[in-house]
Length: 257
Image 1 (cartoon, helix red, strand yellow):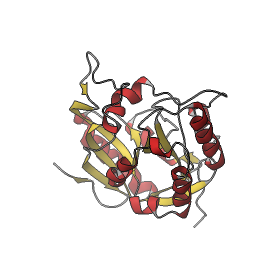
Image 2 (image 1 turned 30 degrees about the vertical axis):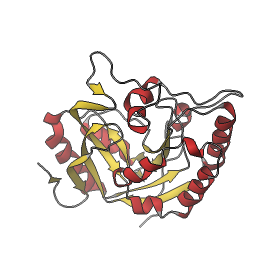
Image 3 (image 1 turned 60 degrees about the horizontal axis):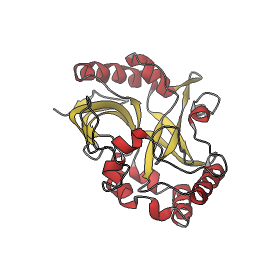
């Protein structure tokens, strides 16, 4: 079999979505983080947005269940990586370490994922499962590599790991998945992991930016994704997540009703 090759930055959208800081700037939570994440990370923070008229968010959770097609990643594959362990040691040794909600890393360890398609209508769940099943039966399991930490221009306060999927027929494998279900290719697949309890001051921000620059091009995890998943949740940190269907490269979708 030919060696696995992965998408590179020319094929992905990480460069344009990455947050860059000028001297003296600091990490300030944006509205998205203050509404969807901060209430679950640090409920007493004065920047928390508890609710917005016309939306069903209340303190970080929403009344109506949301569904998404996601790429789950094994906590073992992630946390047993020597590179991830070295990075985490560097973060824990930093000046901003006390502002990371470390307890959330443990709470979310079994729910690590990157979203391929959000806002899946409940009426489309069975169609998505069948279409993705058909595609995976044709292309097989998808290998990925994750690179060093990513801080984006949205959800500031959340540090991600960017996913670089395997190329299949010289195309982004996850873009093939997105195309199969009729959604636009995003070229962004992010595993959210570290969450900030408080904003960073300029010196802490500089230290974080330097750490990200040091690690951004390093591959920290290589793994094969055995299945994709239709996930149901009532919050954006997936603390309430439950599986609707696991879709693997062989067999039929295993649906939980």
